[in-house]
Length: 312
Picture 1 (cartoon, rainbow, N blue to C red):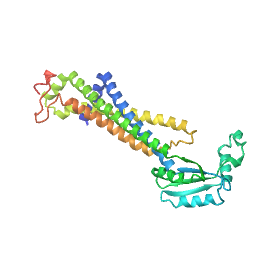
Picture 2 (picture 1 turned 30 degrees about the vertical axis):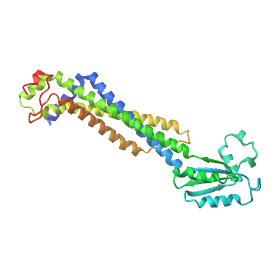
Picture 3 (picture 1 turned 90 degrees about the horizontal axis):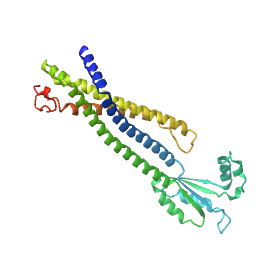
């Protein structure tokens, strides 16, 4: 127990002695993991909103009025029956002119100036749910053959494709930046450990001469790197979490976008980010130590950077 306390104290002493360099290593870990975590949150938001769109109406076909321009009565129902039979279509909802006017009144209930219109100008429509959103172009093309009956076709497939593309780009960009900065953080931590060892080379040499094993010498520096990685990862998790909370509070007034990212998502990825930060710190420490301490079997030569260590 006393030995563990000694090793922990040594790690804290190393951190205090090299405070500026330690801050640089912590900052590198923080930036890389904050970017990675932020990219994951944005990707999850886009995924949630994309799935919400995929579960709703994908195509709206606005129809010409029956009894006008040679369109017979019952043409709307015939079209709905035909579209329902298509393999790409999961369901079709028919909205007549009366239902369209009721919906219009509900949408603009807080804008009375928009309600001063002739309800007859609102067309009936067929609202289509697809079995797979990727098939929207096929259905849109088939509806074009009913040009005499259909006024206009509105589809949300393009918007969903844009969201999916944006999600992919942001995810790759965030992970790419995180990878580059993560490597930079590992290198910076390794340099921090090397500086700490060089500053304490006489003490390390004495420890080796009195019989301390390589691992006994290594552990304080490994703990130092792990602490640096954990602090940087903890700051990244806290920053992204607080930023998202504020964004969700601001976005509560925006009904068209959902910010309902579950807490389980944050908890799971927070643990992953913290573990990654600790691992990056340990890896940087191991790389930093490899130049100054030989292995237990003596197979690794000692770095020429510190003459005091040469007899070890």
